[in-house]
Image 1 (cartoon, rainbow, N blue to C red):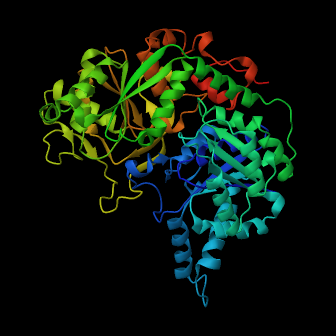
Image 2: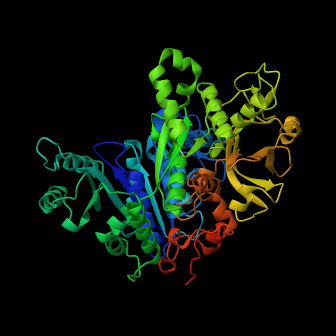
Image 3: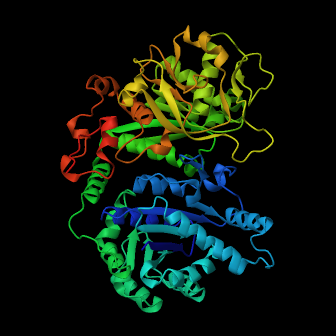
Amino acid sequence: MMKYILVTGGVISGIGKGIIASSVGTILKSCGLHVTAIKIDPYINIDAGTFSPYEHGEVFVLDDGGEVDLDLGNYERFLDIRLTKDNNLTTGKIYQSVINKERRGDYLGKTVQVVPHITDAIQEWVVKQATVPVDDDVCTFYIESMPFIEAFRQFQFKVKRENFCNIHVSLIPQPSATGEQKTKPTQNSVRELRGLGLSPDLIMCRCSTALENSVKEKISMFCHVEPQQVICVQDVSSIYRVPLLLEDQGVVSYLSRRLNMPIETRPRKMLTKWKEMSDRSDRLLEHCSIALVGKYTKFSDSYASVIKALEHSALAISHKLEVKYIDSAYLEPSTLQEEPVKYHEAWQKLCSADGILVPGGFGVRGTEGKIHAINWARKQKKPFLGVCLGMQLAVCEFARNMLGWKDANSTEFDPESKHPVVIDMPEHNPGQMGGTMRLGKRRTIFKTNTSVLRKLYGDAEYVEERHRHRFEVNPELKSHFEEKGFRFVGQDVEGERMEVIELDDHPYFIGVQYHPEFTSRPIKPSPPYLGLLLAAAGKLQSYLQKGCRLSPRDTYSDRSGSSTPDSEISELKLPSISSE
């Protein structure tokens, strides 16, 4: 029987429900269970595709082209699984499915209401999605709003108590004036949840420092749970420590008893790997700085997967990562006139970085600043990675400064350009914005054996990565670029779309049309990002000469096993990991 773990939150948003749900899934997966995850959002949008990055952070893209909440990125990275768009449930999706049923006549003769029709639809969706793939044992999911609570109040009786468990995440504030940990917000939060018909089995307390015993006992007494059901999740040096923190406090043994799951208690290789990764991230001494040149730099969640991909790669080469966020608009000459201090600060950050990354984005603001940054990286031979829009702007920069096409641009920004080096795709529907891009996993074929990126991918003939774009490099102009050493080394299956660019006579100048950050994992970093970090740390050539193997001190030990299939790791030829 499938087991369901519901994670609810109280007091404030952004408290870490997603990381805790992922961490619970991770420690259960380490016990040999199959785990999936569902994120339930209250908004009426059908998906996250049209969100502003400033409001909700990045849009995470799945293999099937689903544009979803960034928390699904955490689920995939922690659990090392591939989710589908139906793992992100929104109010909009539920209402749309119920309205479609009503129009088809499924409810003929009935008055369609929130209870029971909407609540039933939520439960049916969860049960259906929890069994994809069908070998899953545990489904962790969390909700962010009250409209869904009634559905789960009913659901707990449908699936029976021994198959349903509620984890409530709450904040324990610690005012600096007194330094005392306060439990009243948690008491009120649990009382409100109980009033709605859900009783927490575990109360996970987010706090800045470890929970005092007296505070734990107070929460136990007023929230009607045993002291061992109150779990302390204090601030830690790395999110990789969260699963270890939960494991140390007996979460697995509690869930094993509560959900009647036969779990082995032997030491688990996967968690040893996480511990080793956490210890290593705390011990790093060498530094490597990457300038992230974008337009949403005031809110780091806008580039959550990009930052994670950089962190995974930095950890793999035993360097501490420093990300220098640069608002691309500040690099433009107009800023020199209006705000000279910001202009010089931005350029100082760019010039002092070891490598430069221009991520994806939409809209014209800041694009000229990104082109200036790319020009500097090309001329100064600084390691550079352009992702999606970053690649397209690298094409524009090269066309302007090396081919002499001064007005070269994307038709997204200048529809009247005489040299449209980036054009909109024929199948794009400009009438609708949502879900009309080239989305999801697509194959890229390498056209040359000498490509640096191909070597980083373990000399693969092709790669399959996730895409999210509306514009593409104009294939008719390809020959003009290649004559000057600007090579399109990766193309789509039909050979019509330019997917990967590389520049001759440069330590590392790579552009990719896809988003490799979405498939990066802590123990299996994304090759384009790994290449950027290696080049920035001055290690790329020795890495390639060694057949794409890291030096022994940069690898994880053979003792600790792997959280990912050995075959996947050997694709990248990272550490050699025993298959015990």
